[in-house]
Image (cartoon, rainbow, N blue to C red; front, top):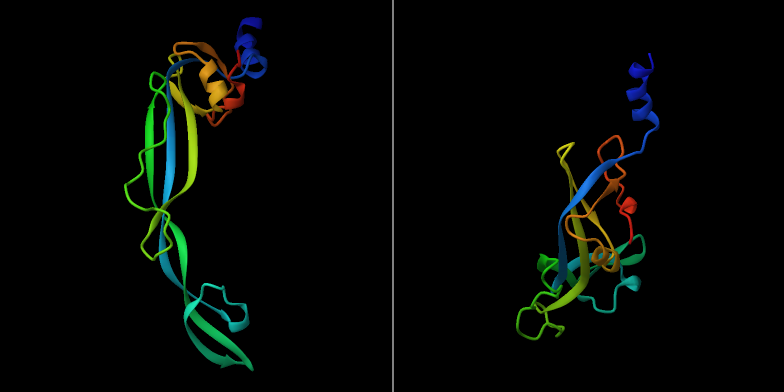
Length: 165
């Protein structure tokens, strides 16, 4: 009886997760490139943005309502640089030219993001996971290192269970 119940007890109360191996480590640096464009909008004329142009007015319920255009910076594309642990992380090269002028059609660098990923696999369970870590923790983990990674019943990795050395 104990032999039959042991696997069930191990499954229910044994250590959670899988033994995984660090297969690779990668980094990704991204810079959003914003473009200055004219956007249309509408609102009460006494509440328009200071940059509003091409204003068309009409009276609605005794108040002036306006349609207008206004220059806005909007995300248009992303430049990125990526590499492995062997390469030093760096920001992507930005396109040449004056990216900071305020003319319509001008481009400028916007939000910057950095990601440091561990690519983990479990040979026994034939599954793989990616865990994003802060750079200082990512640097501590070594390729080929093995450890127990907590994984929930939906096979989602708990990246906070990556051991810190």
